[in-house]
Amino acid sequence: MSKFSLSTAIFALACLLAPPCSAHGENQPDGIHWLRSDTDAFVQARAQHRLVILYLEAVWCHWCHVMDEKTYGDATVRSEIANHFIPLRIDQDLRPDLSNRYRDYGWPATIIFAEDGREIAKRQGFVEPERFAKLLQAIVADPTPESKDVIDEPHAPQESALDALTRAVLIKRHATTYDKKLGGLDIGQKYLDRDSVEYAIARALQGGEGEAAMARKTLDAARALFDPVWGGVYQYSTYGDWKHPHFEKLATVQAQYLRIYALAFASFGKSDDAAAVREIRRYLIDFLQSPDGAFYVSQDADLKPGEHSNDYFALNDAQRRKRGIPRVDRHVYALQNGQIVEALATWGELSGDKESIEQAKKAADWIVSNRALPGGGFRHDENDASGPFLGDTLAMGRGFLALYRATADRAWLIKASAAADFIAANFAQPTGGFVSAKSSGPIAALPQLEENISVARFANLLTRYDGDAKHAAIAESALRYLASPKIALSEITEPGILLADDEFHADPLHLTVSGAKSDSAAVELFSTLQHLPQWYKRIEWWDRAERPLPNPDVAYPPTKRAAAFVCTETRCSLPIYSSAEVLEFLKTSQAKHAAN
Image (cartoon, rainbow, N blue to C red; front, side, top):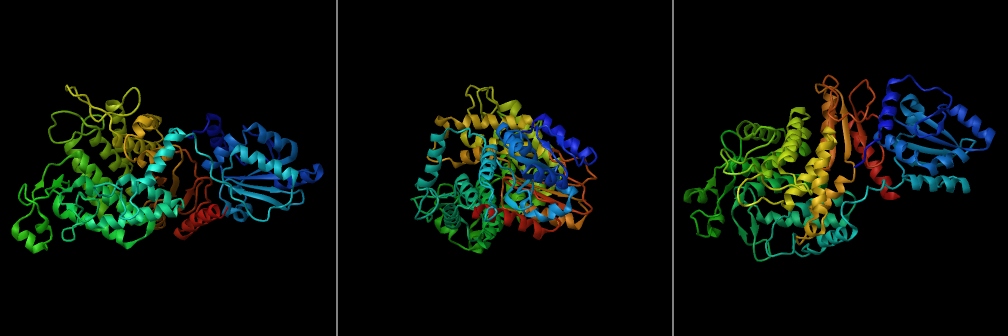
């Protein structure tokens, strides 16, 4: 996982606290003798017949720090600059003229000039050392100005935890197990496989049209499992099609479908996906919500146990109620409530549905009051014969993190962090991975693949928010277990492992609002950031009346009014003051990468 060196962090802090740098040159920790005055730089360039390399930085910018450490710290890059270039480094906050001129490039921006001031090449964002060295060498060999702007490819991720063959097999299985005719997995039971669809959505957001088509076909086909009268989703269909549902309705299934359709709506903007979310939510509230706001675990498929109910579920509401209502299991488990909390909070975040957020908070509060264990964990039921079980604390931890994203209330992040600590203390295996229960009984608990995927993704995203290295270690441990070919290839398909691995080795889209929570402009900006489709994003709201952000790894400059800061794969924005500008910045970034 990407970490800054101590020297880089100290340098960034020093730049914030110190007065403006001298107009003359100075040695930086990267060993380059940077000038701070463009006038001085071009005087020297003309005198020495050299090129000028302008490094336009923001001292608060994540990718500038990475550029400092990895690219300008590279010996080959330093040698090329020393031999052929006048290095010019300017903080864009100090030079509004340059900031405005190159604002579309985000930060860092790199511009190479001839000695007479002609632009030769421009690059936006972080450029890897090897690519950067080759660029410098090519310009020295032929300083002809480029015909168009070139956007460097996103930085190479760190080495995958998966070996190349295992990764290739997982990707191939994702494709070959897909039912091209009917959607879903090409197996006898039809249901919406959560991780397969989420992986397809994630790839679609990166430009994969084939993946978008796969996701859409499955999402549309799975609507056949919705109860057209009461809402909610039946568990699955048999006979290899979507026409033979088994009518039980499990809280876990409702939560999984609700969350996936919420992600789909944010990604594709289809009203059918929003309608699917509302139909599931309607069922949850009407049939599975307790008077206290928590959620029951399931509803039976049969009106009379053992008797098929095809005829019953073909009836309308009045006809069904006249005959009776299938039994609802009124147990209230932390596991299922955590899953529903996450789903409702995710929908609230992505859609702006405040009522869903309030329902998620109410269920979470009830579980905290009635199922909490010392140390941040949760028991399953009111009284458990065994356990505790990993799934309960994991589901609640994910639910808490979703509520933090939806509300920016740090109390939820504190609870999510405590849940992760409980998981590490009670379920970790020395060799990697996490077992499903802490039990002293005669039957040993074993690690489960799906739970470890969920642990890896939860702990990795959590550590981006709270900056706790212990939580990064949790994610690494779960991924180490999952990366074993024996585990990774044990199922017919498991793209959830690809999701976990991809996320662990990349930084999330980082979105921050700086402004008072009472400021309507800040509220609007935060809402805009929330509605961006990615699940793997770090979205924060810094009200300076509160303490520093939980993971203050970026030192944002003060602004006179509410502002948003956006960091993509390779660059960070200027302060952005309107929702339209946020969307335009992201649109421009995506378009430039696609064009190059």
